[in-house]
Image 1 (cartoon, rainbow, N blue to C red):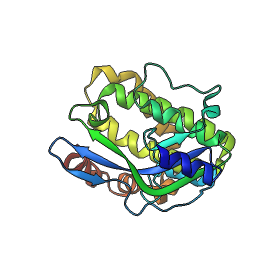
Image 2 (image 1 turned 30 degrees about the horizontal axis):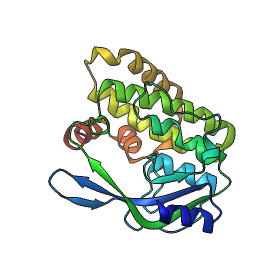
Image 3 (image 1 turned 135 degrees about the vertical axis):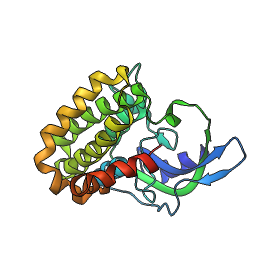
Length: 220
């Protein structure tokens, strides 16, 4: 905390981002942001990192590896009752900040508990909430960061392809399934172009049977 405050003041930053360790029940410790680089990224670079989780950028959609100036929360709150609430908030705070500083030090230990919300990747509620929050972020990016809109669409499209397969037969997800199918239809004509941003889309577009095998074997 003291180091983060020092970095914020020394770099005149509204947000300080730092690396973190993932700590598991068996005592295993994983350095999540390998190769994280000290920098003052542009807002556009930050948005790109939020979409694609670029390790060396260290930004991610987590609140826990960041320190914020309190003024940023004026008029911004976490969405109530939603999983992945950080995802619906971080980009707004970054947009509002005058400057973001990324520190190459690791200051946070993030306990990874089996059975936690973030570790049940394909629970119907988590998938639904993430999709809705991503739709909201997509509309925001269209207004303020049009250069990364295709990246956001590609990320959502790849996730939607996989979620529809993984949650097949889950009655709780019917509503979000309909939304995802509609999203896919709206972007179907752009699938070939968007494949340059996502290996999932590329595989889905050029070899659907291989895509199904990939989901079955590698997506848990």
